Length: 169
Image 1 (cartoon, rainbow, N blue to C red):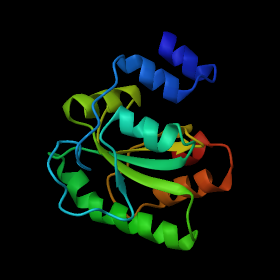
Image 2: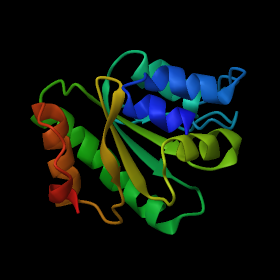
Image 3: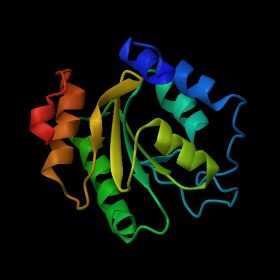
């Protein structure tokens, strides 16, 4: 009850996520969060290693963000990664210096499972939105890109409009 009530009463996700973890999580040594050097950095999509990275890069900086939760064993997720990168690039070009941070995180391992659980993600692939560092809308389950639903979600996110659940059912 306590954490959900805090969220509904307008509690800060930064505080809720940080407090729920207890001790600080170790900072990942690489973009993939597993300590292995990353092969190449994606200039359009940031890799988050878990709750700590989400706090540091999105929540505490009050950014707008679209987070793509994946898993290495998920075949659908693997096929969607290039499409998500194209979508992030296209959106950045379309909105010229888009204020939206496009990010990706694995929902596996200790940090990834904790992140998915705290964000209410039951299955991957999933998309979670943040506006000004706070959760925005509901989790989106999309299994194919390009997606009109994802485009509409970014339009809502960048326009300042309130989330309309009926539009996304």
